[in-house]
Image 1 (tube, protein in one colour):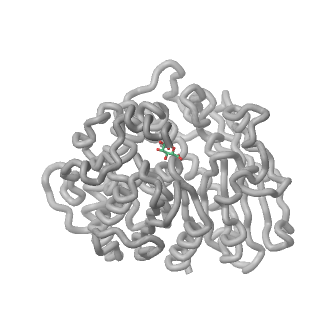
Image 2 (image 1 turned 90 degrees about the horizontal axis):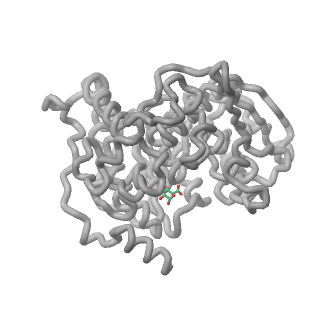
Image 3 (image 1 turned 30 degrees about the horizontal axis):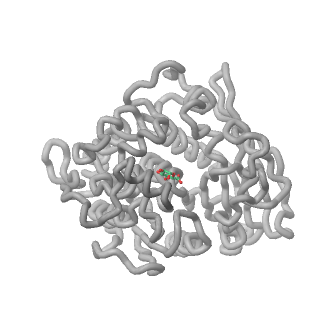
Length: 407
Ligand code: GCU
């Protein structure tokens, strides 16, 4: 606790609602030339591209237009996993540019019943595929040795199994696909050369251009490659793909959903600063703090907004609006003040006008709901008791939201 207090004092972090500055958000439905946006078509042709460009050039960096080769190899397939309830599958992704290769491993559970196509949740794990389950057939994620020394407790199987309610997900008729995010971009500024970013033609190990993508951009890109693979899978209904991202992966999930409409449901779990939380509130983690602690997450241009959030040309309600007409769900945890629960809620609420252009249902009050009273419209939200984490309760809400939209 003392350490946290010192850190906050040092980094000047505000946890006092009365100290949130008065702010004016950039307009969602007014184009750069001043024109009012009044239809979904106009949003899609005029305003949406403007905002995407701003998020790319000023915050997450540009996703390259060129493609690199991606090959998939089924490494294991077990039709009798979990006492015959599911088929487990391990798939090696091989990314290459002809000169250099990077490998990633996808872990999947596909319920054996019903026999038809089924919806799927996609989500990265933080500590390797082996951390999500006690299943001993899971191979170690290829990049994990780059980030964890050999005797680290994170090599233990199932060390984050509590975050993956596999039984529940499967019993409710969903497939699930997970990959370790380090396989796409090992989460360390020194390891850029081991990331998929290093395979693209514009990569220069010595130089990072101001609008060049970094780790969050790469993670978002990687989740779209998982979708490419899922589209080849007979048992997967590719019109029913949901992405769930926690924290830094919640940031990446929102950015993925903004760019790739194949994610029909986008779920942000405690994504906070640079995810769902409004920057202009300067509550909890801020641009300056995140850029200092994680210099490899956002593009370099983003640093110019350190302590000047009010000059950002965008704010995060606009990121959420970019996901429309895809369904979106934002979740917060009461004790996770670092992620600014109110700021996360407000973004979900304030993205509403764009969803309404599509005739979709939104959060109708700017008052936060009580704990454990989820809002399940085309935009969803909940705040639960407890800390920064992914809990069984969170998964129950995501499954209810997915049932509502997919079943
Ligand atoms: C840190 C970081 C957050 C991030 C979180 C996480 O706390 O400051 O921005 O969301 O890690 O990924 O768990």
